[in-house]
Length: 482
Image 1 (tube, helix red, strand yellow):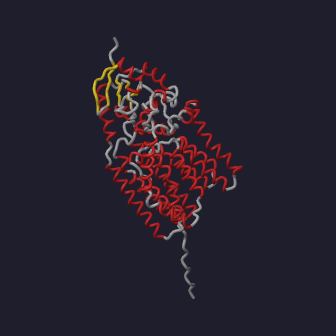
Image 2: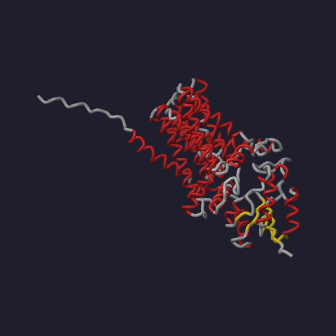
Image 3: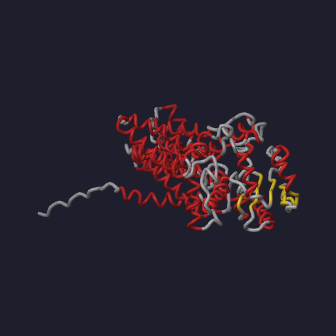
């Protein structure tokens, strides 16, 4: 008698098989959602600022000494490295790095959700995150700037904390913080996970060391006093709400509405689940809350600040879908896809009048100066230096650092006395050492114009003469000695 055939044994998909199927999907979706980032040479002044910083660093500049900004050093270093490898004439290498940053964030979120709620939840989280990740004004969502590069660090911090890897979690928090200070907000949910897992005595020292070593290392590699001043203590005036209340309120409401519209598929299941059941995921709620505080910190509410909310929103929506009927998941993905398409089209077709102005201005600067000449662009568009291929005459790349206009403030707290502490004496010394061949007044009626800045007005009256205008910007050439 023949033995009965053995029944087939079903084998669960291996970890490798799961990621082999999911990674190509996430990679394709990441590339599609980032297509608009490649259709403009530059998206916003932050990219221009970083590009100019990178060129100055490559030519021997020192961060927080001869090259300054109110940001930590990680992203200027990344720009410098990309320029060293690929040249400084294009931001395409940074665009590619931003694609990788978004893909890495999606993969980490998918892995986190899969570990907690299963394979389907992992796929859903990765897809939802990428769909909502461009749900803001394209100049905020598509630019290769701080918030895009914060996200992998914050997601990695949560991924490591979920697995009890406290030293690595601290290092990931440090990476986010060293990209932009608000990236450190993820420390709150990480600390909650440390408490919930019941290992604070052994985990807390590893978490603290993992965070402290990279931060202290960055301070020592740059200039410790300058690092502390520019990243922590020197921004009190910038963070003030006074003087621009209506302006800031309108911006906050506009960007909140944009992200809410992009999250039209995510928010209903979260709200519905809150009404009918406890969703758990306290750490994710804390992540969302701490990110919201980071958005509000400084009282400026720029659109790119809101990118920090997208990762916890995707996780919370996925968790909510676990207790709702399956058709709700289909509706959520469909709605999110439709919203994503709208923002994708906006990114491809949106005009960029300020970029066109900066390009025309850079052409005029290039025509009126020699490659070795220093120039001063008095405005808030440092990309003019980069587009023109000219070095700035000062370490202060925008008028904002010298007048407190930084952040779009349009109220009374704009002027010399509201500048970064100690900036004007340094500014005067640098203009004497590197007297600009051309000064561009790009204020165009803004409250930081020369008529409200006596020191600049006297400089122009004594040493310069008007030689032309470009779209309302006034060009002043240096009067020859004698």
